[in-house]
Image 1 (spheres, rainbow, N blue to C red):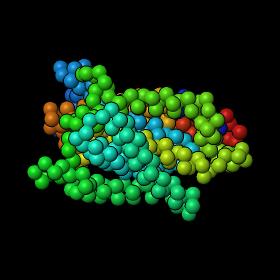
Image 2: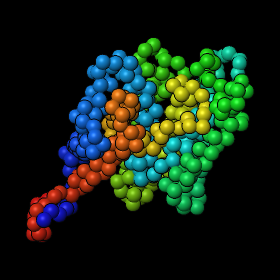
Image 3: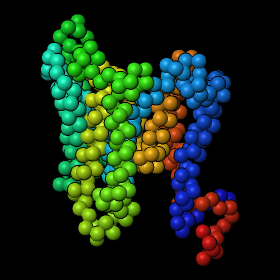
Image 4: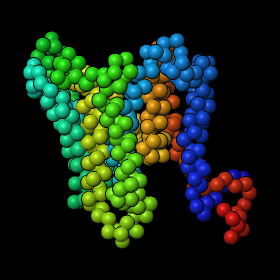
Length: 364
């Protein structure tokens, strides 16, 4: 019979092979899911992973990789810092929403004035909106010892109610014929997050995501704070003896992750989305958790994982329209990535053995 045997040391090979194995397993079991729905599994997998890059209309879909990958990467980078330190911000979706509301609110407050300073003020407001929302679970944790997972997650639902409220009230377009939603920021030049290079999908949000990857890499590998983050996650007791302040680390990690999520929301509402609406949030904050772990909490890995997840978004949309696959099946397919990642990740610390227990002292 199969059993798990703990390794003496975690396997570095499995640590890096886990994302690849998770993607392969997702393709196999996702193909079985599509077959059960009456679709050709090979055509479905090809549609999701191949057509957006090399298909007939790839010239249109390739720029969308950056459009959809940018916010995922930016949010996941912020989350990964906390995850490495054992600080679990699960409410990035709420911080994403607050960043969008605050950023759009500042831009619309100046409407119809034109000025170069409006967009930078929106960026600051978006980052502050996400940061302040993340500070709520942070302060509650350091002052009262509350669980940041539950508090940050429950605040997502509060943020969604705020989004509905401002869409129907404070930010509602007075010339929108009664429909909920703000003015279209794409039609307001000073507040529009336009493409930096036409036809590439590259806008300021994507640039911010790439900058975040670089800064996170430098922080984790070249800065003392990055060492404290890694040490706290790997050996909390050793970190306390080394003089690491848990309070400061909690507030820093939650603040950075909230600011990154808020920036992602601001760049999205001022660019691809264009306006604040009731259904503005599309789950980027939750999907970014998958991206962070698929990228092994490493900045470069997150960059690649974010582009891969963006590919499944785009390919999933093609599969829905072209093959008639239900949206729920595509969401389940994306969820399989995290499921198999966590399942295969067990092999990093354990090995499969056949038969009974090994003799004491046998090499692991």
